[in-house]
Amino acid sequence: MSKAREAGTSAMWDREVTIIFCDLCVREVEVGNRPTTFFNKEGWRNIEVKFKEMTGRDYDRMKMKNKWDQLKKDWKLWKELKQGSTGMGWDPVKRTIDAPEEWWAEKLQDNELEIFREVGTNDVSMWTTAIAFNIATDT
Image (cartoon, rainbow, N blue to C red; front, side, top):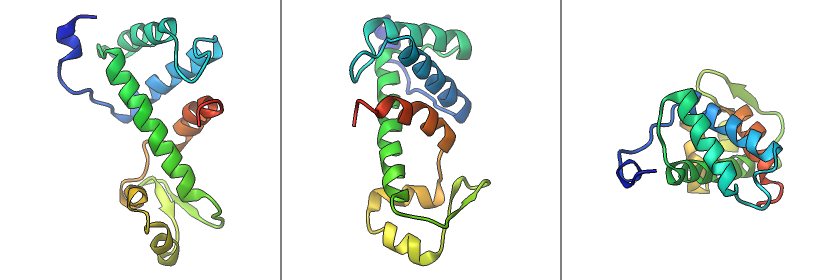
């Protein structure tokens, strides 16, 4: 990894690339390259190489770690948002929870959760597959 690449431009994480990244992370967990709360060197190396092969994007470990940490933070917020709630729907276009105004008013007292009302998520199933699968030992 060259220093020039590491100091390069910001990473661009669209939905498709994020799903590829999460799938690669799940594979590395399944083969034992996340023995603790972090991927080991081999795990990160495998993710970097396969990610570049599949996407053509040459992201360094720090960009990937930052994305992992952001997904994990978002997943925890999403989990907090849904906690103790029933009878809600899902808006597939906006990718947001479809809930009454009263429910949102209560939930949005925490400003961090507000992002989920209008923006929605990249893909909830992606979080369920990747983050929830991996977070069992890393809460």
